[in-house]
Image 1 (cartoon, one colour):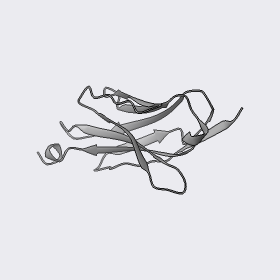
Image 2: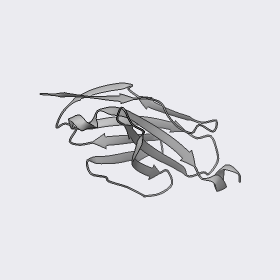
Image 3: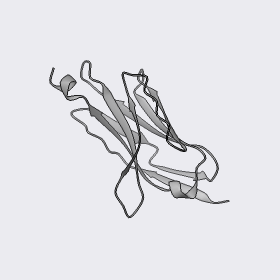
Image 4: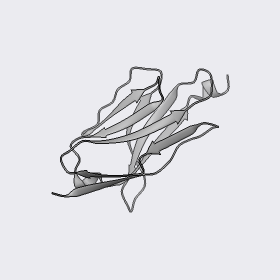
Length: 120
């Protein structure tokens, strides 16, 4: 039995809006499923929100994992990583299954918006 520690820290392009991650530390057993949760708040009118997850192994720089769009049906799956998006309550989750020791690291949830929507 080995424990995998996953650390989460707040990240995101705010533009007067918020991105929050919870909980801040997760410890999971290898072979299980890990869910990292993020909420976002956008106060604009009709922008498409682009949500991403990144992972940073130390030492190193954050690496892109997965992205979803708030206004579309886009769904991406990458190896053991998938995501769930609930636009109605602004929740974006990263699912890792099965969790392995190499998943240890710092995870970032980020949000960005289309420029045309920002300035319209």
